[in-house]
Length: 307
Length: 278
Image (cartoon, rainbow over all chains, first blue to last red; front, side, top):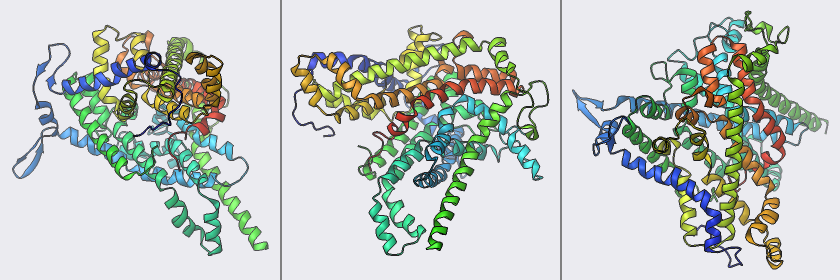
């Protein structure tokens, strides 16, 4: 059982307890539990919200995931879904890079120097500033003519591309923005907390054995931070599968040619632009299934990371 | 010995160099945003060579507030965010109190249900919630912005873990003195959990202030726009007037900045609460 209590005096019982729980529980029922059930039901219907819903059984699922072989080639029923799933996964390639940068920053901040608090606050700024304001800033930075990036490149004689309108550069541009926003943020604080939990004696013992800085990093720091790294990785992957909406909406409109459309943007379009409620619910449930599988992997292999 | 000191100093210098480079990379775009927001919107202002505006056009900020509906949208955001923050902290703290300190039918099962739903993507619940609100006729009202955001499984979970670790002596003393459960909550639990509550409140504030997708979905009338939606529309209208656009962005970011600075002391410690244990 996840919550064993020693038997103690309890402050309240049934009725009192439910009074305290009620507001939260009602919210939970109306905006989480019932909607999830409703989404499952919805995925069996075709519904544009203007006409009455029409029961179609598993057709939505077939339209979404189905494939057939035509002339020896695989033809997907919804090639867009697979393309956008690939986009979503591709954008997550920054996760290891972000983690490494966060770890480096955390290691540097773990030294007893002056101004550490100052630097920590500076590094945390992009995290607190996030949202539409920062996305607008980046649309300015990536502007082909006036943007900071292309003007800086022009100084060294390179003519930069239209970052957000070029099929090759749109994804890397979004990823770079993500790294800038994430490197000194919450993950870095988690690493910092993890580093401070490593016993100093381990390093002293290694010093006596004449270990180099790199050896200490490889054989003490990294293994001791494994639970933290695992936690950050899983959380980033879960967030990654659900992410990308704001950037796609504000910066690129999902383009060029769908290069920056992620699953969440695709779901939004199906639900609230094209009003395919049933189909949108189906995609959302498939997304849920992916997240669920990752969470189960987390439980199975994550050990005691999450209390 | 000298060599050792030299190495130590070299290390310190390298660390500072690294920190300064990363810090510069982080803060330069933000400073550029601030500088751009003060430039003349009608001149060719975006040249890198003129990073610092020759003359501060504070007028941009006045223009953003006066010539658009920004003041109204700012007030909407303030109202919605404060209501959500207060509501969420209140509902989740009393629920966490019940989970941590009371005994009732189904407690463990309900709590397990809360944990299980924390990983459900927002996209799954968003569509049915929209349809539900539409049925109630609440689309395009403050209700749609606020009500679905009034509870949090994550906050309840985090506070419950925190409450479980509070010492019980004070509560027991209060019980012996004849305090009822509400008095214990107000006079014992809340004062002891100040850090956790402030951390949660800051997290909720930031999340709600930045929230873009949900207001975009449920709000259609301009007078109910929150800041993020307003800024996105602003970009469609004034796409090329970067100084005005950046002024709007600065206005959106400033409250989060102030809240962060004010609560930083609690926040940096609190954010790792309940996430990882060694």
